[in-house]
Amino acid sequence: MPVVLGAARRLTLLEMGDDTADALGVPPERSRLVPPCAGTGLTAMAVAAAGPVPVVAMAAPRLARRVTRAAGPDVLPAAWTGALLVSAADLATQRVTGSALPPAGVVTGVADGAYPAWLLRKERRAGAV
Image (cartoon, rainbow, N blue to C red; front, side, top):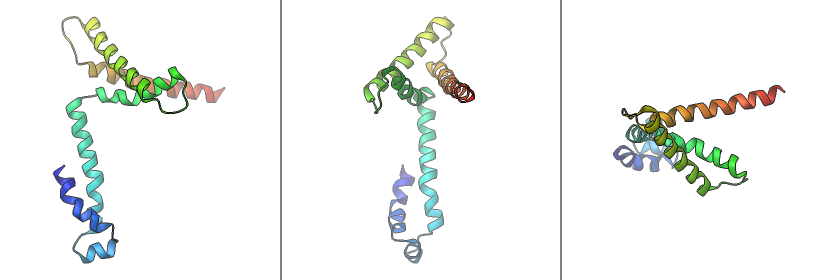
């Protein structure tokens, strides 16, 4: 975050145009690299801190839409589906492993990898028919 806050002035000057920013001492090429690099770093730190459990956020809305068959975005069904997925992953780790408990993120990571693969396979079969 300090990098983003420190680059805010440069990015504001960059909005005036490359020539103006360069005249004011702001290198446009280097300044354009700050937001994507900072965003990637912040995302990596969030995943490192929380583990693979947030990957559920990618699968939960798709599953909720399949269950409810709603056309628009349904936040509440997606939230309940995500909570159900994480709870099921935790229950599965408790029941399957016995005394050695791996984190629930391992099960959600495997499940969230298998679900998109299943969707791709299903779409490939539907396209081949």
